[in-house]
Length: 124
Image 1 (cartoon, rainbow, N blue to C red):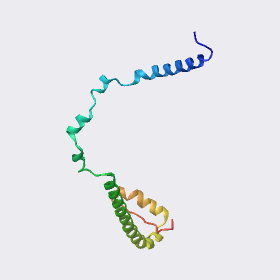
Image 2 (spheres, rainbow, N blue to C red; image 1 turned 180 degrees about the vertical axis):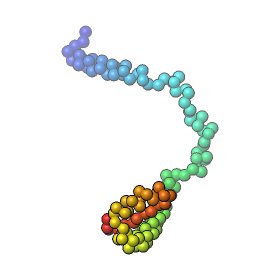
Image 3 (cartoon, rainbow, N blue to C red; image 1 turned 45 degrees about the horizontal axis):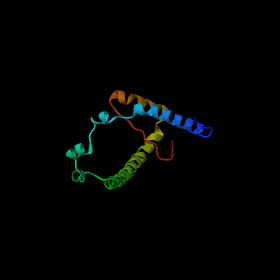
Image 4 (cartoon, rainbow, N blue to C red; image 1 turned 60 degrees about the horizontal axis):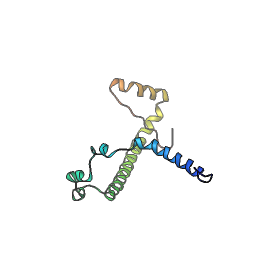
């Protein structure tokens, strides 16, 4: 017969066992895991020596830094080219009003032509 001191302990234990009973059916059994590869199976495909030929995290970090530097250089060069076009197009853009610009943009692709109007930086 449980004593008054042991009743809360037994209730707590009963709650814990109920929680475990809820979880147990969802856990994989040894038989269910047999269809997955083991360490021995994986070693047949790639050993540590084989994996040394692949990039490491440090290699990828260096490559990323190089790509960022390269992309920044490309971005700078594109900015220079765009500014060159903008300075050439600025006098022409002043002569064309907004409605004409819209018409050219709308009709240009229909005529098989592409027209780009570049506004100078800092302006609309």
